[in-house]
Length: 280
Image (tube, rainbow, N blue to C red; front, side, top):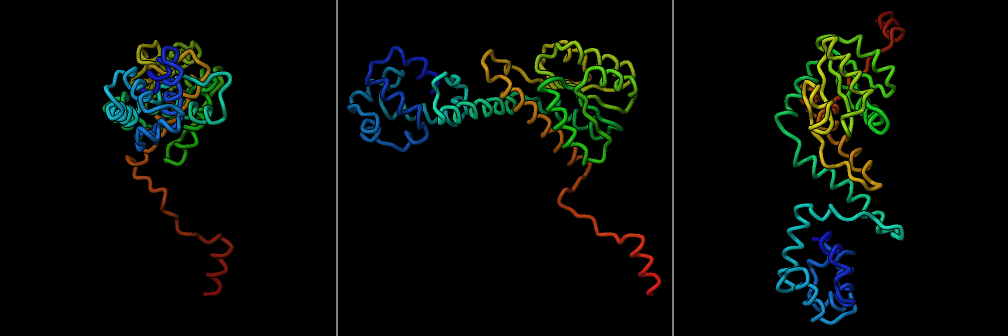
């Protein structure tokens, strides 16, 4: 709904544009406002609000609020237009963060549960896990290493193509490579995956479902429709990658029975233990 309002903005009258700006600025608050209050805040008459609602294909203000509420509830408003060059601080906060939220909603709605279960099973039983990524995906790989190293499985992350190509050749059955790539056609990642597969390792790819990397992998966790042409696409893909890694890490922790809240009983040092023995 908010995207539709912005797209219609050039075709609205001056008064209708004032209403549109008031709605876009505080959409959640509009749901609790009367037509008179919204008209007053926008600096227009109540009939101007009605005309704006009709321009948005609604019969009146109540129908407009209903459609707006449905849009906000489904998260559709997060697919908003990006900030402009003259964006204010408030615009930057809203639109950049909403861009990240949009990516998380898409991942939540499109990630296949059966494939997540299969990936968790594969990782939980792995003898060694290696995360590969380049550029921004390399940062995600290092974050994944930080999350997985507490799960009782040897784990490393490599973002240098020469290093992970050599490392892949040293793997074998029972080892798992998690290859992270937005496009899925990065040749350095593909080369290392080919080496790992030839050595007997399994491969989980977090990438576009129709990519060369996805077709090679033992299992693919698809991440589609986030490679927008705007400046903020890296925000979307990074948030989605990190969310998928979190899902896998939590799933593996539960599968292996890891209790992060439990604290091990303190043990005395050898010197203290010896002293206690002599004292006894």
